Image (cartoon, rainbow, N blue to C red; front, side):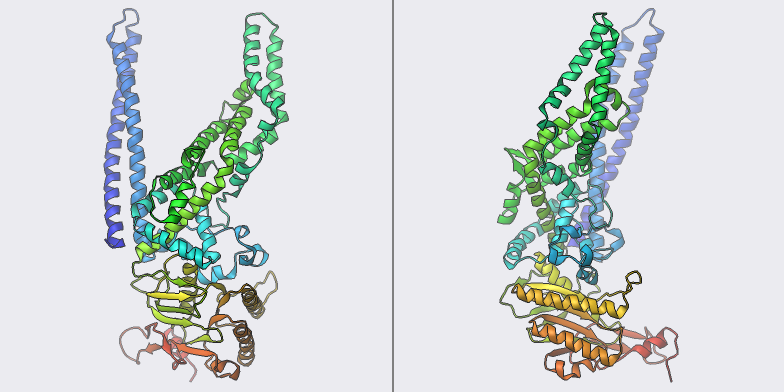
Length: 625
């Protein structure tokens, strides 16, 4: 079954089940009201006949209470079923939106926090690297949003790292069979996604819902458990307080003794309020994700895999003979009990029993038993979710292929290569070769003809390939590549950086990346789109020739797009430039249809047409005579 038919069938099936659950829920609500009314009637009868009581009101009341409790249990199951069916219907609606690239109907995708990237992948001042914005890796219409089925923070962070940090060929070779196996398991993937959806959606800030604070607590040292005197004081305080209170009521001791016990508890609470609150808040801050982690870990542990990589991930989800999901549910329950400190009666419970001390000790018992395993669990879960997200692409796009990434490949060579963020019905594929070293692809063509789209298609497919996923091509081979781009460059009024200077700074980063890649024994794939637009033509040509010449000498592979047809004629570049172009069709005056059409097909050689003046006329501006 093709992806669109599968999603439509599952959407309709789960929507019908949700509607049926809603009908059952309404009926159960009515039944509960009737039973509650019967219980009130029985209670009223008991009061009215108190002088000469009958047995039947008591029987009716008992039956009504038992029946109400049973209906409440059934109703709760129906509500949970309705919620599950509704979420599954929504997942399949999102699947259809993903196929059509209807970005507004897809859940947001979180970017990976820059501090979680290797230093070489970070941009200036710790920001996201320029390649992320240039290629559309994150944001409203992006690769991260297309693969947004990774829903837990661990899954999204893992996938974000994979998109930004190319894997080694052997790692890619290990991920691809895992992705292929998960692609054939849509129900497992949707169950995993559904489990992760209980986590807060967060926002599009890099670093939203970061699991690191929770991991730091889990791997840290306990606090109250290392203070036995304080712990035993907290343990003995409740029975002593209760005993003194009863003794005072019975007149065995002065009433002031009970007051002193309460004051002692109050003093101890205020003296240690800060360290207690800090530690309880640290684990409680991630409590919203605990249920999502527990549910997702349960789905992952229950799956059976043939692929060795997936089987290894599944075996990592346990500790001391118990599954990770059970450990996480246990922690979620203890955190919920500890969070009673936010309730109205907390002050009374704290003064009487030193509640927070016991809650922290109970949580620290979990920390001591399971805390050292949590990073392994979340790492395994994050990898499984990231693999499942890439597998969703492989399932949704059966015409895509798994690429060959090997050190011996001389070029980036794609057959029918397309832009993965464009829907299949509108996408145009082209045969594209970038390389070998010592050459570069020079892309010319008029405005809107497809030059920038081609460069982004090359970069996005290189990103997918080195994440271990499928690529938008019939075939693709490439060597291990670092990526550097100069596509979307902006000036900065705040920093006093002009557009031309911003372009130069970006090109400096590209050149530095080529030198760094060569030092690591890798190749750089550079993508330069209409560079150095901020200066005159003659100086631009000389500057571009100098930059490209340095990149050629560094053994980098790359593509450069330009309107400047004279650039390829420069002696410094002529021998190395492999020229390709796009063209357009301009409608004759008085003809029907749009004024200009594009077929987005790549052709050999330099561009033979220009369209700036035709576009001026199309928008109602008079071109010069």
